[in-house]
Length: 77
Image (cartoon, rainbow, N blue to C red; front, side, top):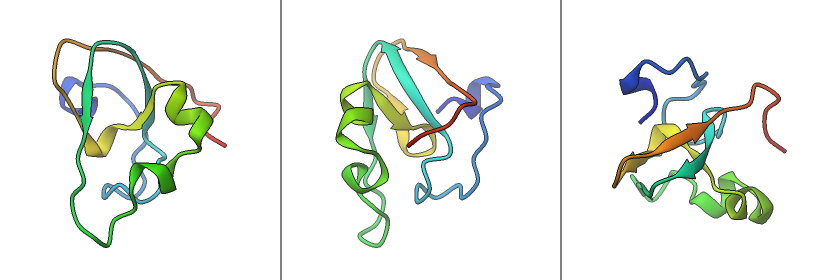
């Protein structure tokens, strides 16, 4: 999602298996795309706390409204 708009966010796997591209949804709404049965679910990619904080992997998320995203180079976990 973010890459299409020119955001410089690392995306190591490009398949939704590592969460290196996780961003925080500050405003708006997004939809997590479950692509294949072999790709981890959101709950296995991110901790409960990260999900509660609005983090989503940007490579497997699409905006369902106008959104404002935040990214931290500090990383996850």
